[in-house]
Image (cartoon, rainbow, N blue to C red):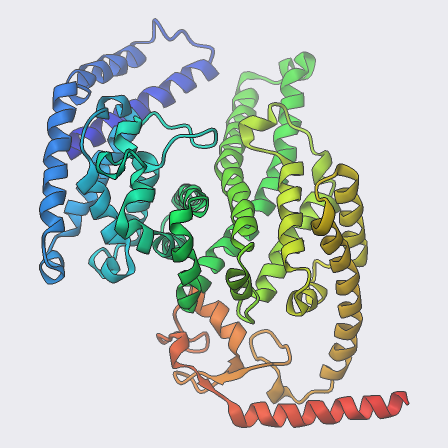
Length: 520
């Protein structure tokens, strides 16, 4: 079953790429022997692989097998080889991609419950392979997320909904889902950082869609409340969000002008005709690569910004983003995006068929400003914005004016965003003053990795070096080793450098007192 599905998927992919290549070369599809041979193979495979009887038998078997696994004790379930889980995922993803309508009326309840169980924190060690855990998340999205205007799904409602749960979606009716799925998906969002460079984009876009669905479901509100109890998992999730926006959005905003240039070049018959065939193929190939990259990245960027918006309506979750480990990176990321949208004429960037790229700059700016306004009253956020290398008073002023002019925020949200600009400017003056103080600080008070005055010094037991807690926390999120000797290290092992911290406090209080006396 699994090898057959893999072979069919490869054939379908070959047909697509061959079709595109022949079109690029202005060839004739009907007379091309290789293309027609591939079509023959594809059609022959479909006779078996898309037979309603075959699909019914396959899913009855796998659902029965999942039911058996669900009856096993945890210790026994540990002995299950991971390739069995991989096979289950492969069959479900294959069906959602190529024969979703044939699933109508089939019972997949056990498959759903097993997927949720294996993703739960209690059972997470049963499936340790990050790529496989990501596939479990894909299954929930591809098979069990109900279709709507944002999620175009061909999977029948009879599959996504639980007949024993009053016809409601499994995602909202299943007991274990309501208890564990929201925190499981937040953890998974961070874990897929360890999958492939391109694959993690698709995984995270799907996880974000699932989280939005769960957030809108009252049944999952208690579980979202509990996610703040696991600080380590939350920081892993938040780090994944920030990494993704930093990496992807800058790349997208650099690639879109290149796409626009080629669009104009192709539209100019004289200019396009002046290129020889080889040059046109080169330009077209690069252009299509750019389009694919933007189409892959922008949906994730859009979903991340919306996710930040709805998550931070909860005060407890908002406080987690304001932790010293996260707040500096969050402020930097938000201002970075703001710079690209407002500071570099991102709103004026034009491409043909922007919806085909999911390019909606005004909508993203609105989502971004909503996030800014949700943190506007937080002193820590104001200070970190002021410290950011992306901050300028002109950027904030222009952003407020643009937001008001376009009507992106109204009422209290607009007032908070306007207030933030003033508060950050005030904080910037204090920051500049403090930085003048730190210039005379002894070297032992400076973080050796970033050369900044430390606020919470900790000692690394593996190397004996002292660094700021927020610096080593961020490092360990992406690399679980001591940066000085590459030995394995976890954040739980670092030791507070209390003696040095007290020494720093005495020095800083004295420096501030001298400055105040001098000012008087």
